[in-house]
Length: 297
Image 1 (cartoon, rainbow, N blue to C red):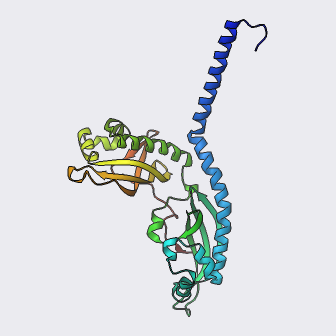
Image 2: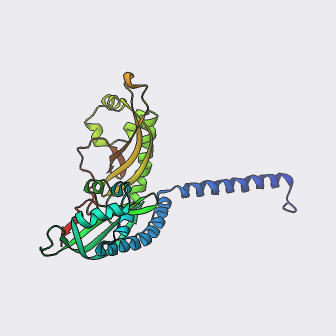
């Protein structure tokens, strides 16, 4: 109790204090969900991942050069390892793996959002033609987390589905795209075509009537979009997300929504991000994250 303060004044003071506290709490809540705050969380996690992945990659390449197949096997994706166990895979690798690596010099790692990128200088020869001279190459390796462990991504098509390395991207803008992506997908899920239209690329809206837009997008129901990664390079963005899609044709209404993984594009126009439903626009391109795994030095 505040001594010497009349009851009515104490009541008013309490209301003011409670209001200030509520305002501070609301402000902190907004800060915790701001693009800068979210990016700071991503960067903090990325720093920890980078430290771990650097050691993982060094261990992997030491094992690859010495052909310690058990260790190499530990860092392969589950779909590559198969179900026969490491000994069966090691037997195949010792006889059939395309390359012998005589030397490897792993460079610095970049990691972000459960993905990793690294340039590795190697000296290699073809296993089936050991008489040929060894070649010196620069590999652009990609890694990803699988069930909490780092695995190397060597499949070319899978690498093409990964974002560019963080140093080439606009990471803060990715958080702005995340917000627009959420708005667009809530509008789709609620079938709010006016809001969906308002957040679509102005250039696209010039070549398609509003009624045609709704007719095109009303054929399917979209539910529960979850971003897997977001990439912003310049004024272009790509978002890979997992989503449930349902064909709303009357003959298919009894079917359950089906899961799909899609990559959608966004564009920045006059400082504002929009969903780009016209894929004729040039998309953001990933540099060495989607390049061939081996390039001559």
